[in-house]
Image: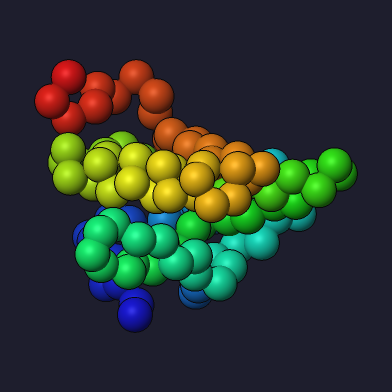
Length: 111
């Protein structure tokens, strides 16, 4: 799906979801996997699919699941990631779930 650029903004390079992800992909996360295969998780009684922005395997073998966010727009969006975290912690406890916020000063919804 291609996005129509807003007036006065450059079009995103093909295959990236945001300029923030593009910056990470070509910078500190250049050795990570961008948009890897989805990860299945359960929120009873529904099986869902989560597609992380990046994954990275550390030298010790630890798998980092990395989500690049501008911000959480709603409490429901934040809750989705909490559900994913809880499921991964219960099923794959060696994985580390990491958020990189574009601006960590932006308040969370409901705070």
